[in-house]
Image 1: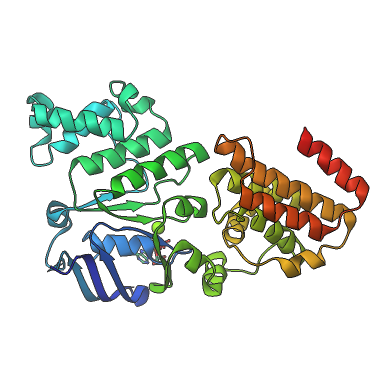
Image 2: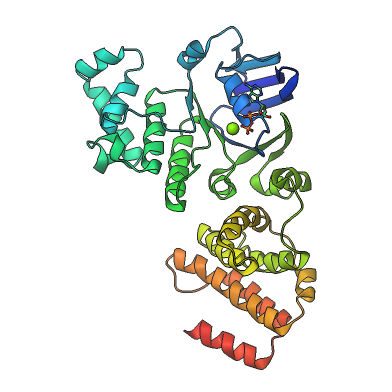
Length: 377
Ligand code: ADP
Ligand code: MG
């Protein structure tokens, strides 16, 4: 036993001479949750197409639990234990979530058999458990067409799990979901990761941060780099190709952002509440146009996820107004995490770094008074 669920060697996929996958080598351990990211056109979907047998490689080798997949058809590969969730949900809308799951459990029966045949007790127990896992117990018996987009996504992930695959492939599960639904899908994948090997393709960076352990970055059909989310996001090559451009905000704005992000990072982690607050406040600060703010959120999320030293940035925030703004925004951000965790007080690391920040900013006394008033309120 190699302990590897997937081993991919020197994989190339050409479409009329264009290499969508270019000499790619990739390994994944049994039981791992792996996130694959990369800009549009990087080859992510093609990569999944090859693993599932939908596309045959031009060159290279693909092993699943030590067995070469190349001789097998898409259907045979599914039977070998690789399940795939596509971007758009594929559930039976007229059936209830429970019925959808029962159908999926009966992978080896025909559709008609499992509709009219009786479901065994063991199966019913799995279905009940699955409904709980995907958070749809209360909506188990209404037609699936009445579910929200996020609930349909979770149902489809449940249907995938019902087929008990050894490897789950999930392509952009949170595209078009609200923040709250996104977090639920993330929690679900984390729960499933305790007993499954899962590969998730995604480009929502906030979501990647929520679930990622090890991240692989694809670029032009090859692996650009691999590591923890912190490692890959601090890699300048990743920032460059992921955004495909220079930052759209000014150097100066970047410095403001760094200072505020460093406050949020003071305790060594970035909570979702801190992240949300930073992204909305900063995007509004940097642009007054709603559409532009939306774009900025995506871009800024890449920057704030890096915890970088700020001493120098601090010295360059010159005007008193701006220093006051930085102090105020930083306070809001560290407040966000304490409110989220339910405790009244700001945690000690963040408090200490905040005190340092205030000392360093050397605010005029009237600004300090104004700040104190907000803090007390
Ligand atoms: P991603 O999912 O990372 O956005 P894809 O795997 O969908 O990227 O595509 C990678 C590249 O391969 C893109 O440039 C795309 O246009 C090209 N491509 C994908 N499928 C085909 C195909 N069937 N024929 C020709 N080109 C394709
Ligand atoms: Mg894709």
